[in-house]
Amino acid sequence: MNCIGYLGPKGSFTEAAANALLPNNKIIPFRSIPDSMDAVKEGRVLGTVVPLENAIEGSVNITLDYLIHHQPLKMAAEYTTLIEQHLMVNEAYRIDKEMKVIYSHPQAIAQCHQFLRDRFPNAELKYMNSTAAAAKYVSDHPEEQSAAIANELAAKEYKLSIINHKINDYKTNSTRFVLLLDDKSNQYELTLPKQPKKYKTTLMVTLPSDYSGALHQVLSAFAWRKINLSKIESRPMKTSLGHYFFIIDVEMEMDQVLLPGACEELKALGCDVSVLGSYPCYQNVNVIEKETINDCSLS
Image (cartoon, rainbow, N blue to C red; front, side):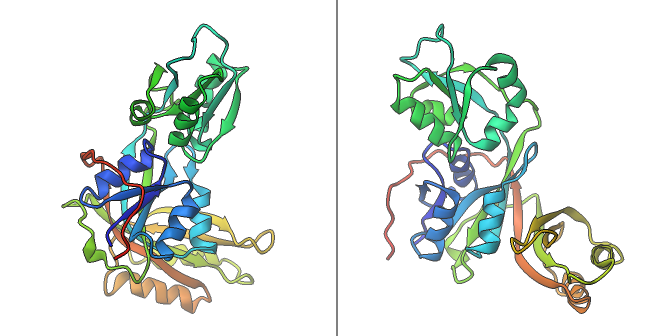
């Protein structure tokens, strides 16, 4: 069983990321990020590819929160690519009519905020599970005076006409996608691209609630070892206001000395420490186009 899930439907940015990261694996779409993660735990797929962070809008909260609070999985690889958003309409739509509704994923709409404010200030903005889901909806409802924000793959897949290209407000718009596996999964069934750009280790650290200056000491555990952190982000514990845990990205692969030593120092301070994954990171791998499938043998 070597099928990989992804946030669908067909034509999503995540499909392109999954194809680039795992060109030799069959991929199947899921309606939402939680659905795709549940499928891993249930054994219906070996792993799943989901968006983790956007350079403009920050972390994809549903991915982090579901990973931490509901469905713990292992981060096994990362793929980062530039994101270009386009405005597209059904070919049956008359463009001279007023645009009433624009559909897309919340982050995509946020990435195009200034464009939408300038060009379509009166249009209603409606959120969908993915940009591809928005494109599919617009394709299935030609009677609506609506448009979708999505990529060229979605426009081709759902036979939509792009009326405005590259509408994201910042040219540096990029997204990190992550491959999630169950701890019991056999990673040898996967063939990742060769020569990753770098390696990364992601930690979850929970501070002791009554320890003054704990965050400073957490950072010091990495600093004196000259371990570089590329990101530190607080997320609510969902227990009460003021209680947080921290997601920390370390720019190195898990080793035998430095990172284990830092983790043990944090534990000595009273922190809870979990390693969410130590994994290769890729950028803009050539995408190999292939057909997705609707089901997968579990044999």
